[in-house]
Amino acid sequence: MSLKEYSKKRDFQHTPEPEGLVEVHTSTLVFVVQKHQASQLHFDFRLESDGVLKSWAVPKGPSMNPSDKRLAVLVEDHPLEYASFAGEIPEGNYGAGTVEIWDTGYWTPGGDFSDVEKALEDGVLEFILHGEKLQGKFALIQLKKSKIKNGWLLVKKKDAYAVSRPYDAYEQ
Ligand code: MN
View 1 (spheres, helix red, strand yellow):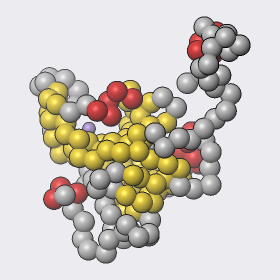
View 2 (cartoon, rainbow, N blue to C red):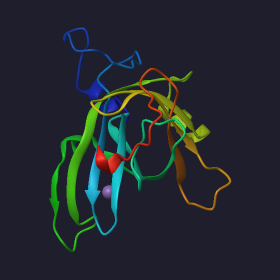
View 3 (cartoon, rainbow, N blue to C red):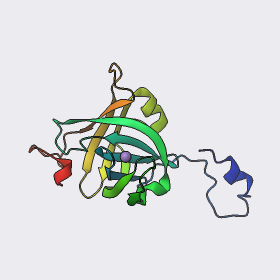
View 4 (cartoon, helix red, strand yellow):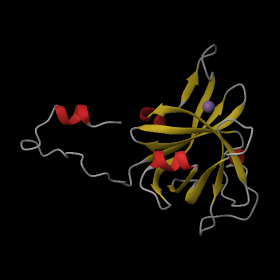
């Protein structure tokens, strides 16, 4: 997202609005996990970045157990407004079925990076989730040598929030 349009419309000598010259990572970046009863029941994992929701389809859903490596297939960016979407996608439409919000909250960068796009290009994104069910350090790691197109792994990193018991997202 460019701030060109934003800046063009404003004279920062005369408005208290931020000029947007400083790149900040605030605690307000939203994340959401939606349980999606489509033709195949799955979870959609979304992280706000640069005005959109970076999105992965996670067949088994996230886990709080670091020994689980959950396949996460990168899909198209979704609009930010999608983070609060729950309801029925009518039959005959893409993704038809019920969407429920399984967990939501905010996220913060967890690794040594300042640019999500760059981290996504490099194939390693570490982040901290501040949700109800999902808390603490996680990572998304791209499967570079896999035949699975757009395949990533969503993993819980070891920390005080991690659990050692089996974790079934469908039962949480
Ligand atoms: Mn979905």
